[in-house]
Image 1 (cartoon, rainbow, N blue to C red):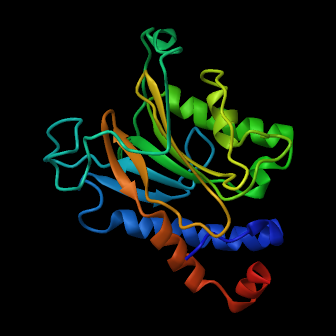
Image 2 (spheres, helix red, strand yellow):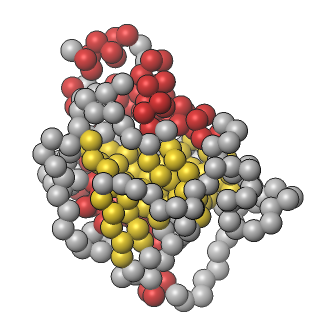
Image 3 (tube, one colour):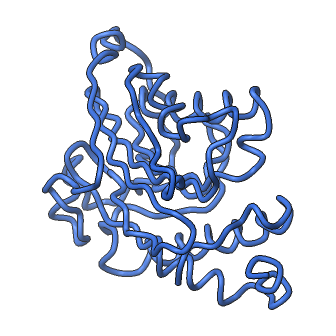
Length: 244
């Protein structure tokens, strides 16, 4: 199903779809064989980075044998993702080398999260600053992030949401194609930050995107199939508003 133009409806209408899409993503990732067995995808769990949409949590299971996931029953991929644009920087790698105390939740640590951008994330300078700083803070803490932005750039992110996020880590030129100005960006937060970027436009099929769950290991997130499931479950009134 092609990506719809969600600028046609108000933020409340999109919020309903947004919630459904998050649940469909969580269901898809939790199915057997998608993620390693000691990971669980949870929707809107509060933590220090202000409620991401979907988080991947490492479960403290008795048979855990290490920090890697390639041999633990899932489909973690070791080869590097292939996306239209790739960026990498180690500008902040040595800035965080000082010793620190890490507090882990008794049910497991957060290893990654997914954010679907909403209009509220872009409706003012404070909102977008809070959003991009949340992502940058997570990456600096070694948490991997996938950002899905189904909205066009605004005066607050004139070059797209990736550029706004990446500028917090490393200032670098990035242009969003005029006909494909919706940005999907997967970030690997492992000292040397990596970004894997796709751009799409209204009417395009959403590609599956990588979500890193450990340095050098990722799973593929089924954006299109989860989007379709959420759209099918949405009320016909929303269909008429968005497609009208």
